[in-house]
Length: 113
Image (cartoon, rainbow, N blue to C red):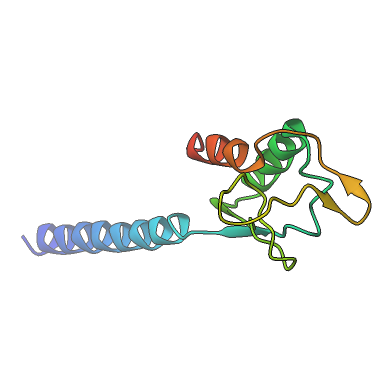
């Protein structure tokens, strides 16, 4: 009888300990890990959809869960078509080809797991 009680106590202790460790790991895994993409520093780099795809996959593969996309650089212009602010199409001598930068980021990021 005494051995049976000790066995059940050890079993219960093991279950509770195992569950609490699992919860701690899950909380860590669920933590949001953000990567900031600066508008000026990445203006030329993110002027092509395949480059955006490459860098989003890269940050995802190293553990980032989300990306913050800068869409209003220090110039006051925006990186999307707007009726309220001028669109930035050139930075530091580089002219961006015509494509919807923001829409591409949104499409890719909403499809992340």
